[in-house]
Amino acid sequence: MTDFKMTRRHFGLLAAGVAAASAMPFATRAAAGETAVAATFPGNWEDGYRTVLSPLVKEAGYGLTIAPSMAQDQLAKVMASPGNPPYDTLLMSPGQMAVAIENDIIQKIDPSRLKNWGMLDPAFQGEYGPTVTIEVNGIAYNPFLVPRPKGYRDLFENPAYSGLVSWTGFGSNTAVMAYTEMAKIFGSGPDDMDAVFKLFKGHPEHLKGVVDSTNHQMTLFQQGEIAVFMCSTGNVARLKSMGLKAEYVAPESGAPAAPVNIHLTKGAKNLDAAYAYMDAAISKAAQDKLKLPPTEMFPTNKDVALTPEIEAYVTREQLGNMVYPDWVAINKNRADWIRQFDALVAG
Image (tube, rainbow, N blue to C red; front, top):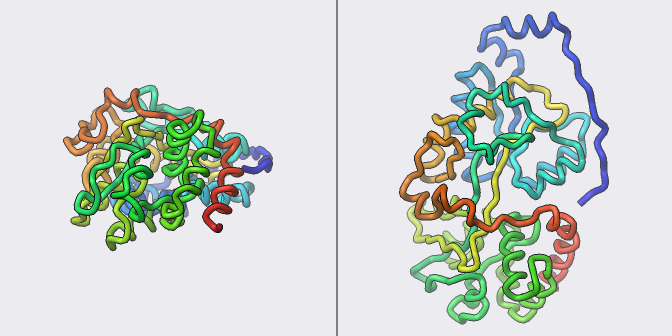
């Protein structure tokens, strides 16, 4: 990815300043600039977090600015300006988190500042920030246009899907998880991406369906230009909420999954507001709303019951059986895979 290393910064606050800030009323603190700038994925995440979390953070006496940005872009922006990070918090899966740790742009959190910390299962209590949901990935399809696929192999071997499947590049976590699974099926293991590239070369009709993002795929799906794409369950929930015929399939080889964590950037300017935002994200009040359509995020707060719709995708007991990729191994190869795949698509 990059060999850039960020210089560790140390900050101190005058005792008088701390005392004065703590004595200020909530409204005054927010007006004085204690507003967390939170990087959040575009689409469902942006809409859900702005609608649900902003009021909760306001109740705690702080402001919240939702800044939509894909995880790779979050990394790039913070690494380009490590001394003055554009965000107080980042939202990432393990792949990007590993890069963030390596480049020293996020810091370990203080769990004592989160009153809802104890409501998380230990597996969701990350030292670099709480897990706010688990994204379960698979295949989205339109049952009116194509039969229910069994898995990735079907998409290449069954002519019913020819010209109707869309893919994205290796910059997408959803895509790279699908490709590592396909490397197991068509090759010798999750890092045998030559087998995947060979597969695409042998099926040029699939290369025509490569676009830049999942959001682009969802637009094409709405327009009926494609009938299948690699997705998270949240993508399917979003399409269904719009009245579209969309169904989710867990591939027969296993459903890839990734926890999503909120991270505190090194040099975050608004720590109190950032912690208030984190705490709101793992609260029962927030997750009870975010588990509902159109977001349908899997709740990590153990007091939040799963809906029947979420249990149709995955139960708490099934989480351990999901396929969790080796992101350290992926990151070693990802830049090269991106170059090769982009060259393949460009012809």
